[in-house]
Amino acid sequence: MAELVEGVHPTRMELLKTKRKTALAEKGHRLLSEKLDALMMEFMNAARNADEIADNTIHQLMKARDSMLVANSIVGSSELKSLSISSEPLNEVEIRFRKVMGVSLPRVQEVTLQRKPDERKYSIILTNPLVDEVSLEYEKSAECVLRLLEVELTLKSLSKETRKTKRRVNALEYNIIPKLKKTRSYIEMRLAELERESFHRLKIVKRKRG
Image 1 (cartoon, one colour):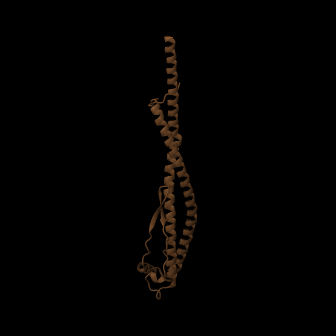
Image 2: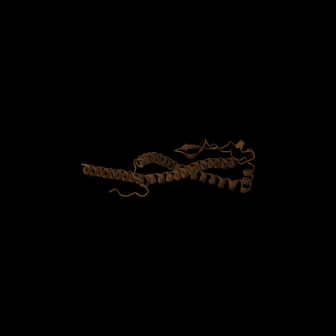
Image 3: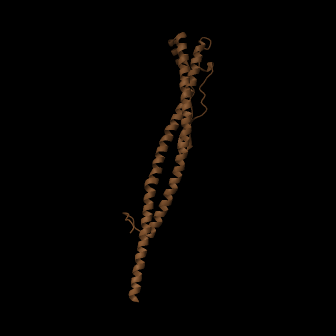
């Protein structure tokens, strides 16, 4: 006898509905599995880039710090502070987004924050060349930090979407699809039992009439 599945009516209409639901769930599982694979591949690529970008950023920040220490000892902290206040701010950076498997990932377009000395709006003639060196190293540092921010936000978004997609894949694979298959098997076995019972009753009726 088929094991009872609560709330399920063993009818042919219900069997058709269950088959359709199972097919839809299996298709969804396949598509989500493909999405999960693509997300994980994108994450691994971004992670490899992140290590290199982080190393470059640390190295550049150390160079900027060293140039600042040298300039500070020769030019003086008050002069450096005054020049930094009078200098033009860095150019604005446009951050766009690209879609990867439905996930919006940040993309900094061709970052160029390095400037020529005359673009910083302080006197080139009256200013020690060390100041230009400090400015340049920190402009390079700003570019590195932006790249690092881009890859960190990318990793964060991919990680979040990967976890969500994996939960949905697991729910389909270990919960929804097995339940649908169990329901389908129950209905099929119950319909077979009902058919045998009907056939048996029909034989009894024929026998009595004969």
